[in-house]
Image (tube, rainbow, N blue to C red; front, side, top):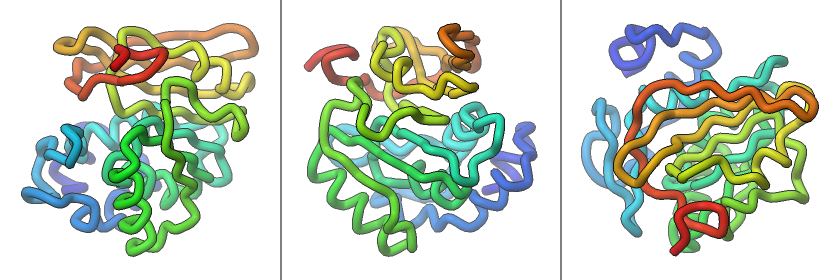
Length: 205
């Protein structure tokens, strides 16, 4: 998986590849081949992204000082796999999930995999988690019509990075936001397909 799906597509950071080689993806995938190059279903109509997309978002969100000791916020815990990758990289991870059942199962999977220090919260991820701010990196694993303002406000003013799919429910592009003081530098990356971001600053219920 690491060699054929990630490194061969240009993501060659040694720490990134090491993390994807260590985290046992099969513990986080309830249905299908966990190492296949495809998104797979989760309960509550959610999905776990293909390994390459998880790696692409992780690479794009990497803080300028690296992951070790960085404060990372994930919106959309899902299976817990993305949170496990961030924890393996050395980040202090806060992850928000609106489905309580998914969050509970993810907590058990993370504990089983040895990542029981990840903090999980049930709630509206579009509001972020101000009590833990500022964050060096924010990864949003669902697509919204725009980047929620609360998430921008919770980014570190000194090079905080946010990665999120933005667009309609059917057509989206990955967006990367780099915060420099009060300035937000936005760039667009690959076209992607994610489940909708539901919440006050997303698509709504």
